[in-house]
Length: 204
Image (tube, rainbow, N blue to C red; front, side, top):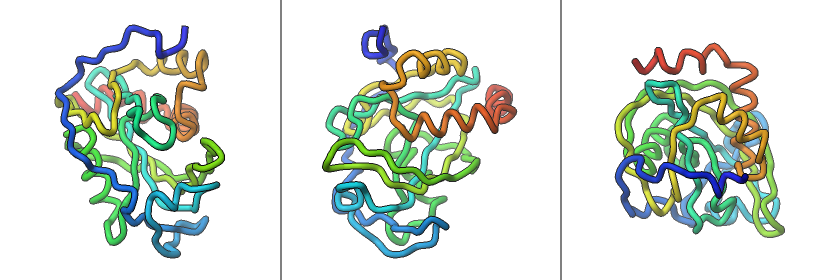
């Protein structure tokens, strides 16, 4: 059974419809050492094979140690309807990473919490002939039990999932998940198991 046919929890949180993403917003271009090389609008940065730019991914856990998982909105240019981590986006020109991660967490999920940097990595993933992700991505972990306010322009559905169950879902239907999430989740499970095991304690 694919994830799209599972009985999902659509009742998590409230919903909003604020527009927070713009195709002309300037992203930060970087080299493989994460040094800034210039700026490019979001649409162009994701065209063709993509131009390497700075990005971030957030993993938010609740008191039970479950991960808040989102299904990307159907209107997304890249990977619409795919399941992914709690929140992901890009810092904009002139914006610090610290400001960007908290801004986006509030814009997509209406949440505020402390976010801990874990690692960063570079990847390229081709969606189709016209668009791709090409990112140097910073990964953060946070803990929050507040009710999310879900931005319907960014998110199709939201649910909490236990770590072992998520492992089984990814193994059973990897095509249902975004490529960056699978890379990040494998590394978190492999190299940061102690951090994930303490998720429930950290939010208690």
